[in-house]
Image 1 (cartoon, rainbow, N blue to C red):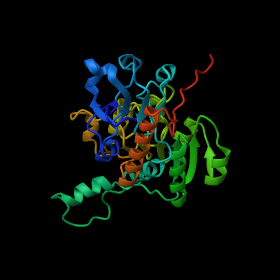
Image 2 (image 1 turned 180 degrees about the vertical axis):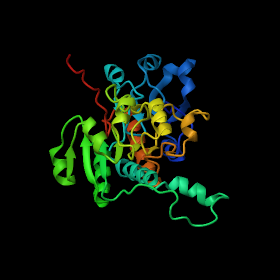
Image 3 (image 1 turned 90 degrees about the horizontal axis):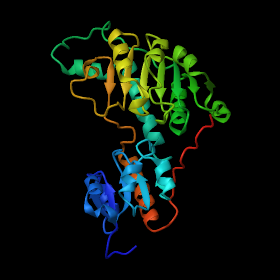
Image 4 (image 1 turned 90 degrees about the vertical axis):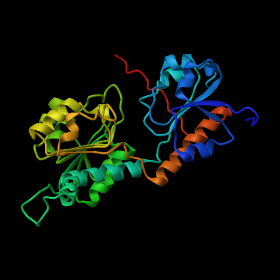
Length: 323
């Protein structure tokens, strides 16, 4: 790659300092708005950081693009099939953030079950004047039943953590995973069976047309009134209106969400005022170590594509299911 004229890379600025440092002297990062400017025909790559939409229409405006690199695993914001049809590989960063995301999912599970966020707020407030053993009673985690919806890499990591708490592990997945069942002591269940039996339902599925709105009013009604829903997947996997109604009515014990749809929620959204929900700002992979590795791999994918080398990780377009 020539250092005299740096390739233009479209990205949703600002990106993390680690990314700009890795890209320094190699490429020129240009803002997303550049896709609508005269220099759009000079852009040679797309780098997605905070999930901007990469559509077929966008790619049509960028005729020289040779690679799309995503800083993360999920690519529901990228039309991978449209990119592949144009000969453009899409790279992502699998296998790096599994542990960190599973840690966060289990953190949310514990915090919701034991009402940690509510307790923190109360302990800091003016009303905490004496210890009351009958106040703010939560739900136990050890020995309970966890239902993991989506037993991929992250789901398996969640299951490993659950075993440390002597939990019964149920899972629902598109395909059964006998090896994981044997190594994790997990039992396969249909979604309906899992929802009815689990004390904690943890979502770790990718966002696809099949999983969009997977947890709605009917699914929430199948859960125990003492159960907690944890979403470490994508916001659109859950019908937010249905979840808000269930939490408001006390139909389930609590929810803990690392993702929402939309993200962020409008500041006047009723979900924000509910005491039995925890919301974190998409922190699944947000550790210094994991984000550094994601930056390194995503930039390596970017540079490989620009230099005509194979990407370290390529996302294959999904095949259409025969009707």
